[in-house]
Image 1 (cartoon, rainbow, N blue to C red):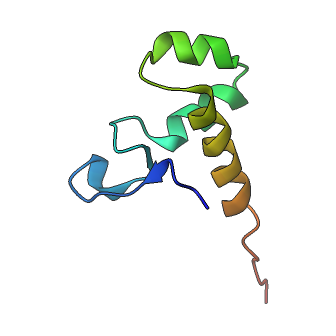
Image 2 (image 1 turned 90 degrees about the horizontal axis):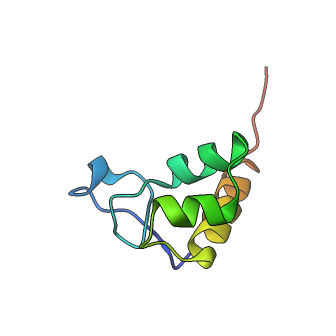
Length: 71
């Protein structure tokens, strides 16, 4: 489902990263949330591909579907 999102305890303590690189998903999602455009992010992180950013956003959307049960 998320073939570009990886987890490795040896990389950033197991946080979600892009393709095993030291680029956390949270950084990409945060940059988009603060108005960064895809081409700006790709310029800042030349090892990334547009699909990496898209999948990071999809992963964040998937996580936000978590149900919270309030007593």
